[in-house]
Length: 361
Image 1 (tube, rainbow, N blue to C red):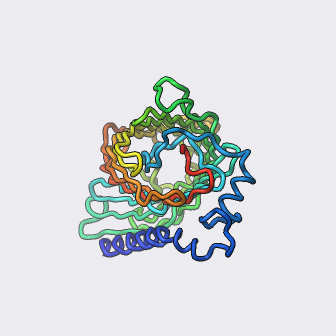
Image 2: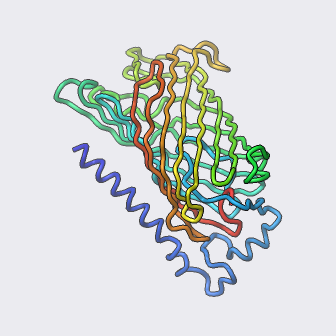
Image 3: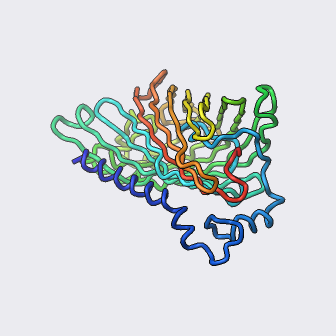
C-alpha cells in the first residue's frame, strides 16, 4: 500500500513538472496579437516594454553567472530580478532510519520584487511512514499532509564585484523568515504511531546571513542563521523536533531552545551552457537548552551534521525559460540526540525569466 501511495505521489509531481515544462509554448500561443519585441507571457505587456519601465531597477550583470540547480540546503545571496520568478515543485528529501521514513517536499515559489528584494514561500508536503521496530511487529502506518508554512524576504546587500578574483567582494544578503504552524501537531491518533504529526505547533522567526562567491569555474556558498522558536502547547504522543523523544503529558507547555542553522557548499560548473556540474555540501542544525526570548527550554537539546555529494544539470536552458535538475544524498557525519539518517534528495526548479534574466546572471 505504501509503495503504491508513493508511486501515485511521484506521478502527480511528475505531471506537474511536465505541465510546467510546456508552459512557455502555451504562453506563446496566448500572447497578445501585437506582442512588441517580447515573446514571453507575463502579467506585464511584454519583456521589451517592461525593461523600459523598470530599467532603473535592472540588476548588475555578471560576466559569468551560470544558471544551475545549486546546493540543496544552502541558500544563494543573489535575488531574482524584477519580472523573473521560479517554481520549485519538487525538492524531495527522504529521512531514512531503521523502521521509519519521512519524505519531505517543500514546494517553493520565488518572485523578484526589485530594489534588491525577493519574496519566497514554502509549503511543505510530507509523507511519514513507520514500521517495525518503531511500531509493533506486523503493523505499519503512514500519513500524508502539509507541514508548517514558511515565508521569507531576501534582501541582497552586495553583488559579486569580480567573478574571477577569489578575494574580491562576494554577494551578501540577509533573509528574514517566518514560520506559521499550519502542520498538524495536536489530537494525534495513537493508531498512526506518530506519523500524523506534521508540524511542531510553534511560530518561528529567524534572520540568516547568506554569502555567495563566483570564482570561475567554481562557486562557493555559505549560510548561517539563528531561529527563535516560540512556545507552544502540545499533547500526548507529541514528538519533539529531534525526532526521538515523545511526551505523554496533556497540555504540555513546550519551550524549544534556540536553533542554529549552518550550511555551505562548493560547486564546480563543468559546462556553463548546460549548468552541468557537481557539488559538495555540508548542512547542520543545533538546538540549545536556552531560548533567546523565552528562557530555559524544556525540550531536549540536539545537533547533527550532514555531508552531501550532489550533481546538477540545466535543461532546457533557453533565455526565457530554463529548468534545473539536481540529485544527491546526505550522509550523517555527526549527531547528538538525533537519529542517524541517510537522506536521498532530488530537485527540479522552473525559471520564468523576465527582461533582466535570472539571479546572478
